[in-house]
Image (cartoon, rainbow, N blue to C red; front, top):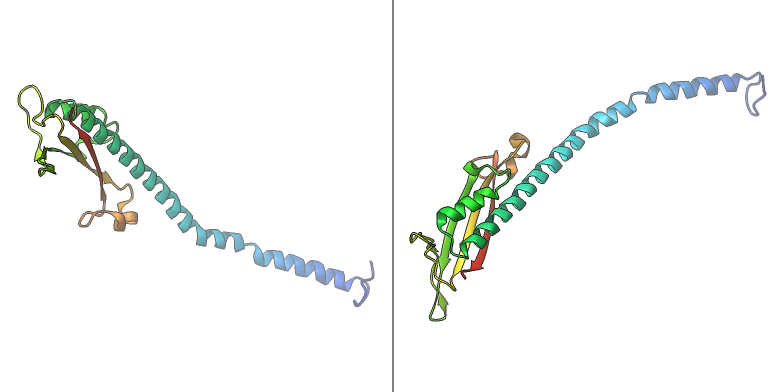
Length: 173
């Protein structure tokens, strides 16, 4: 046995040191599990938040694309049924049942814009006159995948849905 300075001799301090290290390791054994149990709910919440935001952002980008496509088709004079068909064709994974489309136009009259009027169908083209502004507005009811967890971000009265909106204005050619 080695002698430890300031000790009792005959290695008694070395035995105590080994025993106290083993005791410390045993007392810390569950620390990582407790820390993980405390942090895990926040990590899971952050993970679901990232997934939910990613899906919502993807739907918004798709909605913007659908709206722009509708305005582009409307500004060349397509009939309302053709505009809707083209928009639905570019909707991708958006559910058409959850999509609301509003098609309007306004004309420049004496230096002032008239109020927005609904685009009609004259049999061959839409009723917006050349030079007028065409506005396509869309709303999409995005279903929250975890409504109970993120319900406070949903629409008032329906915590499982979030309304996404898009609008595009183009000049009628």
